[in-house]
Length: 158
Image (cartoon, rainbow, N blue to C red):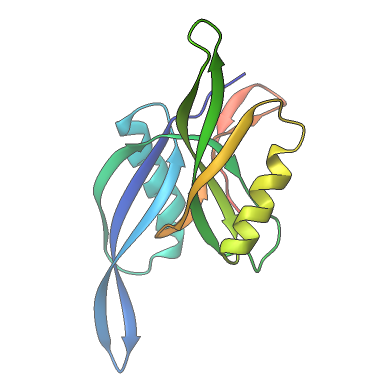
């Protein structure tokens, strides 16, 4: 089983805003990659087909998301960071311990993000509480895909 190594990549791209005017936009994406170099190559590969002008990768940093809940619904066009506190009981001291974990949920709004998160957590044996749901500035997420025919990695082209 592959574990995810998420990298948040910021890209500066030029876009036409009409009347011959060009404006620089800064956009954030999330890619699953092995290294920073791999993340840069992946984001260039994913974003370049959609850019007509110049673009540069301006920043790459690790993102610590333990779980990703994607949606097939085209109306779910936003990404929400969900901070979850998993609750465990220390048997020796009989005290509760809370461990914070970040998850990413694709939804149309905060209510939808909470609903999708709860659906994804159905069947979980862990006790938890949601302590934060916050909209991110991510435009898209590019998970790592494995080609089943020959077990080699491939990028997502959707």
